Length: 102
Image 1 (cartoon, one colour):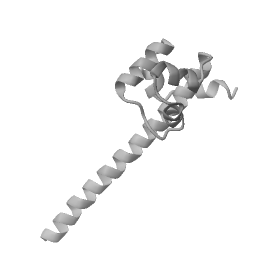
Image 2 (image 1 turned 120 degrees about the vertical axis):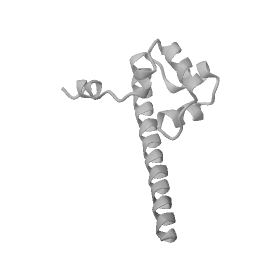
Image 3 (image 1 turned 120 degrees about the horizontal axis):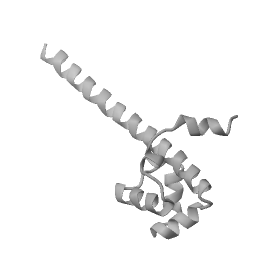
Image 4 (image 1 turned 135 degrees about the vertical axis):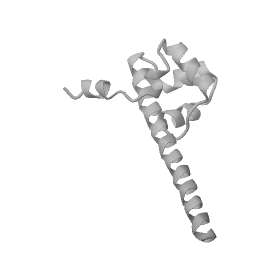
């Protein structure tokens, strides 16, 4: 009985960890897509952002490709620079994606 109990507990923890990783990956993709869209809307590029943020272009490329996420303070700085809200970078907005398809 103890073995079954430990297995169930382990399985639940593993599932929770996998779910967290999936959510993190999804957030990175949403952020990357929104960042690229906002840069384009504001006639800015990755190099402009790297200079403003005082980071390498490789770092900004990782943000734009969904490989990494910037820290919250850096996200705020990006929002201030682009005059947008954090939701514009962190929330999925399907309505905006459909505009170009019409």
